Length: 348
Image (cartoon, rainbow, N blue to C red; front, top):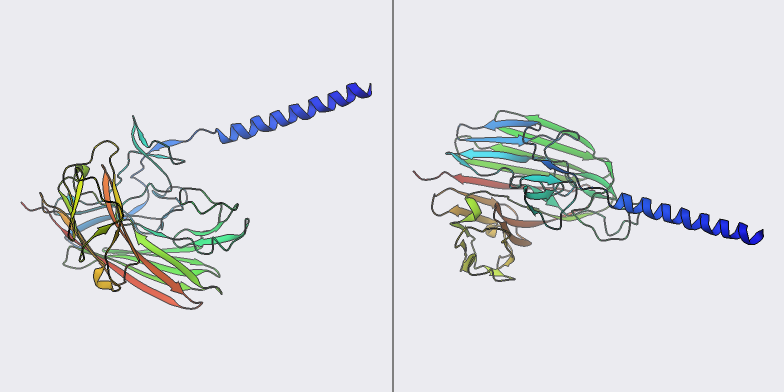
């Protein structure tokens, strides 16, 4: 009798373990959701007589971008000048998780943390390494998030959002201003303003440390730019001689002095991406010109801060030059910085 009871308890334990394992596997195997791009999300249209731009508004339920990688404020869905579209989605569909192979029969599928458009910014997490599992960390433009375990930070991973803060938005005919306040964390202001009478857009920032601990982070603008199919005939010009960490394939792009030139359109899964060095310790080197040498359409962006890192990333649907700057704020301190974008229309 005792042996049968023991055997029964053992069988029950094995069965329960199997059920729990199957349940965990079912959770792990939950299907990845893939959805079409939603361009009709809440937005504001601004203009200055030369430029017309669509700026997406923050909406936790219907917003175009609700991910946690990039600053959710000031996503540019479209910007046109002289008949040229500079921005817009560079992917075909959006998935709930990153795919091992994003090149699918339905087109390019991008995880929702990265599915964004235009000159968008990503701040490095604040306090992530210092936080214990269960503790919190900050991402400017996103909010206060919970650190679940000891794994390294992953910008493609979803974290529990504890506090998105108090958000505000002001829209005028030619600009949009966003604010975000995290109690005991930071005050953040971001303004996208079209310059009167010029083919220019300024992106102005103000970040104040309202907490009791220092803020040490960095921010870069991904500058997702669409000037030609496959980036054919695109040239990047910088104020200094370019030194890449990895030399690009000469069949796709070539570096000569301070220029990077695509020799033909990228196709399939081709990628041109490398870290750039050669810049100095001053803001003069924050000066990036990208031009379609065949049509004359282009963009130049200048910043008022020195660079701490520079990267180029491109695939067949988009290209991006990514300038990074550093931010160090003691409690109560404020930092202000501005990027100025000047657009060139195609020659006719």
